[in-house]
Length: 230
Length: 300
Image 1 (cartoon, rainbow over the protein chains, first blue to last red):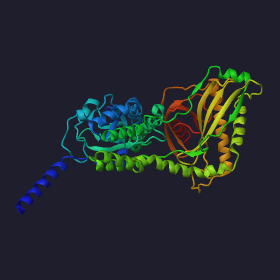
Image 2: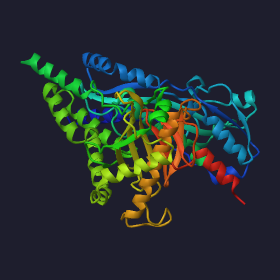
Image 3: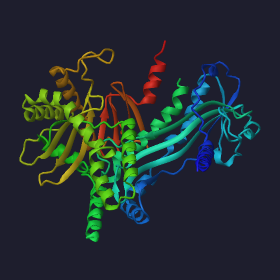
Image 4: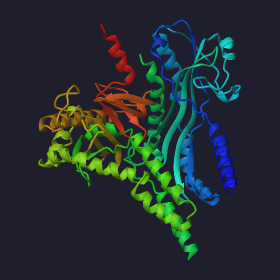
């Protein structure tokens, strides 16, 4: 009996180890002040594909609840889908201007760099888990400064058909600077901005909510731009 | 019984889900004949205090607080998972009193408290007559001809004073409506003008938060004057939006402000723009990029 309990415990620990050990999370990497001293490497500046803003209905909902909530939020979903992302599109240009002002050679990468389309590599702390080394030869760059947005729009949480939060704009992603020779991360900054509407969120046209979206985008922009401040 | 409970739940959900939208400010429009009518007949300025409080404060809900509150709500709903109608009822009740549901109410309570010093400073004055005199003088100065005959345009103004998020300045929000003698609307807008700082010693020192009557008066005068300058420009049709909608960024009294809008022509010391909610705004600042360029050019 005691043996069986020990075996069960061992299997449980093994299962837990297997389940928790798979998820690696790259910690943020701060930009070393030494980075500014060496202006020789050519830096490519690029943007990942921008996901269209959408309203995410989260929380405990069954299929019927979700159908009701989706219908109730139809107008709001349409409004969220119409929010602009141009401020993010201008980010590579702003980053390039700041780097050029510091004496770096900068190349604007015209294509969108979709990380999911690059070969996954084994995870190592301080290295990107995608192999982007092909960009070195393709664009003649030594380093890549990339902004990748992976969440855009707003969320609203529900319990069944009862909303438990006001719709709240959110934006999330990561800014990174890497060495294209070995995928080593020189700077890595995940960002997530949640910006509630100031005032009533349900005005006609959702003016306050839309404004909060642009404030969230600006918050994300600021987090990416801050280390490269002039 | 179960069907009735479901129906009640759905009704509650519909009420909470935002089917009924909050009332909007006045529509923004200018009739093509507004300028001609005012030039011909003049306008009589009438000021009416709002039904609610004259002084309030902007709600402040920061990103970190919102995230924390949402986590509380998520945790609570996760715990209630699988409890059916009981879970629904408990979640509704608890959500209204804690977590994300309480954010707005807490922010409102804080805003009400913050508005009290300015409200009590102004409460000792006959604000209806004082504001009427200010608006009338500003209308004259802005070139709005005063109406004296039997046929005259009516310029009805309902002001509100809203303390900003930093509580160091306020926004004078004026609902403006110009009517002809028959009551037909010739111009309508909500005009919001940012005041200079109310701080007694600028941004470089810590003051005790006390308000000075003279500073508040001067700030109010500046806002009323700019409001009427904007109204006169709008009525004349010379204040059309220039360029597309964009994100406007500026620093107001040390606080970074981000707002979406369309720039308006004819700024004189003010950044003028049309906000998403249709309000015409004027802030005594320069746009972030312009301010940076000025600072850079000004360096020795």
